[in-house]
Length: 283
Image (cartoon, rainbow, N blue to C red):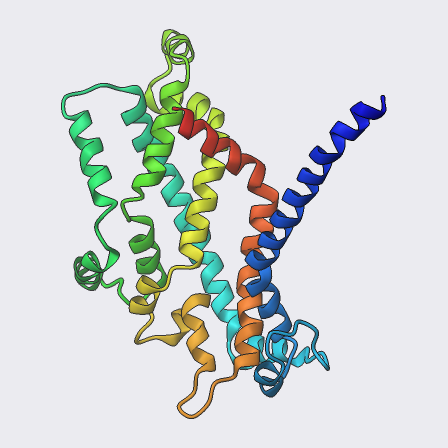
């Protein structure tokens, strides 16, 4: 019995060592976020004088009030919520339909279309900004949230389409055949059967699109360049940069405000996110 207990001790020590290493790596990973939260509660002078310390000498809660009112972050946050929610809904519907057709149907040129989709992954965003601005200008949507939403929601979103296609390809054909026998058409089969069954993938695509849209900078910067009231949170950080000085404390507070909705969303949706990614990889 003692020999068995002795043999387990090295294993337990090995697990404890692995746990300590992973804890150290996790701390290093989240340290920038912790430092930003700490900086949001410090004065601008203490941010630079305190180095990497996480405990503020005095908690400057007024930084959040200054960021919310004087920096206009309340308005920028509202713009970001509107743009992100509507863009995410557009991307989910559009990519789900495209992924359903590519994943469930075989037609001439389908492989070519997939190859073109994959090739667009390597095209930088900057190459598409000129035609996007040109079309938006012609339609009178350049200085509006609607134009910003259409520009963000009309992107290729190849990864989302391929994730949906891989998931739909794994689903049994009996579901569709039974619905077609009952007289269901294409849209009814998609909306009543396929889309509800793809909720894990929808959650995955929704989270990825939400993150990408929430953190988007280039397109919102272009669409709000002549109208600061259209700024999103990522572009709104410029409000704290003056000609002669920068309000670092208020900027840190604004950064915390902007990242909290993303953290809360991921905490509640991480289960579906993992399931959707796993299903797409298996396919």
